[in-house]
Amino acid sequence: MAKQYDVLFRLLMLGDSGVGKTCMLRRFTESEFDPSHISTIGVDFKMKTLEIDGIKVRVQIWDTAGQERYQTITKQYYRRAQGIIFVYDITCKSSFLHLAKWASDVDECAPDVVQRILVGNKCDEELMRQVTTDQGSKLAETYGMDFFETSASTNRNISESFTRLAELVLQAHKRHVDVLLGSLDDYLETAALEEEKGGQDAEDNAQRSCVC
Ligand SMILES: Nc1nc2c(ncn2[C@@H]2O[C@H](COP(=O)(O)OP(=O)(O)O)[C@@H](O)[C@H]2O)c(=O)[nH]1
Ligand SMILES: [Mg+2]
Image (cartoon, rainbow, N blue to C red; front, side, top):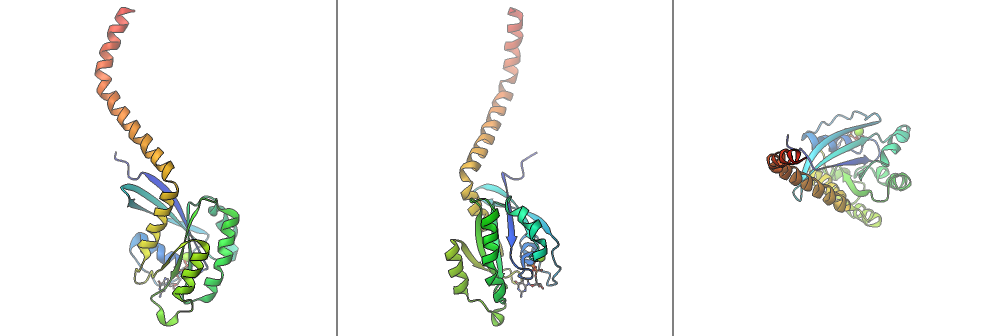
């Protein structure tokens, strides 16, 4: 059976409750927007396969609950993530101010190589805006992250932001992925050669056993 993907990466969504993490994830993986807010309990994940530079990248995206009481569950997932999306709501200043806390939690628990991007969601709600694009992009610059303003409602920049994070993770692990794909190619090539040689070898072996 053909292999359905070449590499698997784990991505994690972090941010206050209500900023739109679950809606963003559903929009990305199921092309749907359900405006009702059902509090995510603990963690949940969805999968999607992307093609980047000819490599089939399967992303497993973990959606966390933003509430403090779930923090102990969430932290266990920091360590296993290769990429993190920090999400705030452009219509909710406090969700933006809390990013400092989310970022410091990650610094404490996640491996150094983890890739991060910053997303300001609900950019369709221009009239309700409390955080300017400039403030978002300045914070992202301070953290050294790429920055997107998204809308799960209109689908603006949803695919772009998830794909960008997957690209960053792929770049960060490129050497490892090349080795992996290289060894897979080598393996397949060797297996094909072995198969081709199979008949010939069987004959040789038969002759050799005669000699013995
Ligand atoms: N206007 C607007 N509302 C959104 C958007 N994304 C999510 N919401 C709303 O925000 C609320 C919380 O969304 P949810 O995905 O459950 O947030 P979570 O707690 O971060 O997972 C819901 O009522 C959604 O309808 C968006 O892009 N635009
Ligand atoms: Mg949720």
